[in-house]
Amino acid sequence: MAIPSPVQSAARAPGLVRRARKINRELAALYPDAHTELDFTTPLELLVATILSAQTTDKGVNRITPILFAKYRSAADYAAADRAEVEQIIQPTGFFRAKTTSIIGLGQALCERYGGEVPPRLKDLVTLPGVGRKTANVVLGNAFGVPGITVDTHFGRLARRFGWTTEDDPVKVEQEVGALFPKSEWTMLSHRLIWHGRRVCHARRPACGACGIARLCPSYGIGPTDPVEAAKLVKPGPFS
Ligand code: SF4
Image 1 (tube, rainbow, N blue to C red):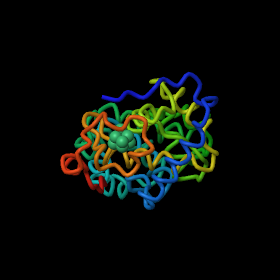
Image 2: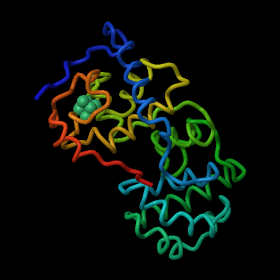
Image 3: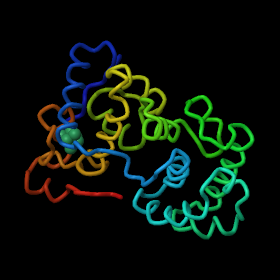
């Protein structure tokens, strides 16, 4: 099993930036359509969908959001929502009581503090119920066009496998990886790593022998390298 060598300082390691950007370019070629796999049409819908996506799949969220979004169209609708009705709709996404508390609280906070609109700033978004840094960056990057790095489980795992960071803390991962790329790449880089993590570079058995960036990856060999065996591990998607 090949383990990537520790990276003491991602920003200073010789050649790291060049190699990281090359991986990003190869991933861009492999996944030209990479995008968030949550369905949404407005910042509010994306914010709610991202809150609902905690501990479940985007596909599961996309199954219930058409019903939810048709019934609750504004922050005021969520603020005034009947708790039992929301719970019933979002139950399949799991942790539905906590998520109901978050999205009703979100509606109330948006109405009380932001005139019912989703604010386009990280410092404001993270003050909203149910909204952490990851959710805020998803919304900034995909609904407002503000560059953001989304450190979910896939992003963190792949960044460590590429040797871009040795950190587990998402904020530190965000900082170290962010230093390797121009801001304009941050949102698409996030999508590409998440797509590759879902399809090929899995947590347990990465499909190294069927991986399009194998020759660039310092962790090549931590999963099966036999092309036939590895091909069976690839999940083609879509996940939405
Ligand atoms: S599948 Fe293997 S070679 Fe490809 S990125 Fe993951 S660890 Fe590296």
